[in-house]
Length: 280
Ligand code: 2F8
Ligand code: CA
Image 1 (spheres, rainbow, N blue to C red):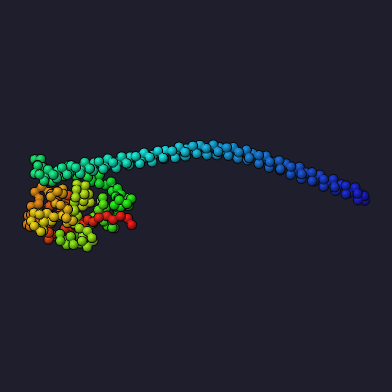
Image 2 (image 1 turned 180 degrees about the vertical axis):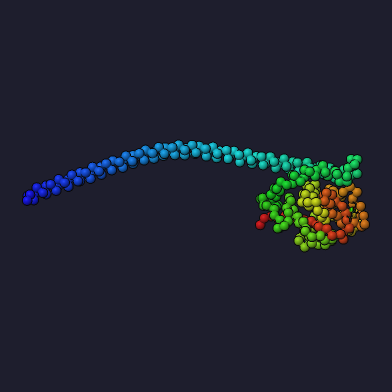
């Protein structure tokens, strides 16, 4: 039987050898892991540097786009302003043209070209007023001098300048139409100038409407619903009107926009007008 000490020594040697092997395996694993980590770190560093490059290129692009955005917005604002100014100028030229035609007709100096249909004089302006009045109406100041306060109109009323307009969807006689407007603190529309005439004509969309002009009190003495002076105000009568044919004391705007006197008892759509109010 071998002495106990030498067996122990043998066992210890085996254990040592086993541990050395395990440690060497571990060393190999650890060194492989380090290699892997180093490789990943290298990849990561490369990716990071690429990302940094990309981010800096993107930042340059974003800065350029932001600059372009500011420039384009400014250009757009300039163009919008120029467009509005030009639109206002064209609108005013058209209004002058209509005013001139209206005055020529009043003075009996307007003669239609041979073969022209009645009312053709307005055809010169008709193609343009539709286009210019499609531009949204600019805000109007209703503050009467105490800082800008937007004008507003009740629901279903259209605003133009400082007035609100209601276009009826049913028909009534001239007198009933006037009463209906009065119920809403309004009066049948009074047309004070060429731009308002243009606005009403376009908004009427080829439908005939009562307007606030009548000679019910005395034949031939035309009166506006709000007391506006008739003789000095512009007129847009159709050629040959008013003719009082069959006792005509009320006035419709025809689908062409021209005015015609009609018997007040006929049933027509109507337009009310009242002042726009400052936004509360
Ligand atoms: O255009 C002339 C004439 O035409 C009609 O009478 C035939 C009109 N009357 C009605 O529409 C009721 C007149 O007002 C117009 O003057
Ligand atoms: Ca008539």
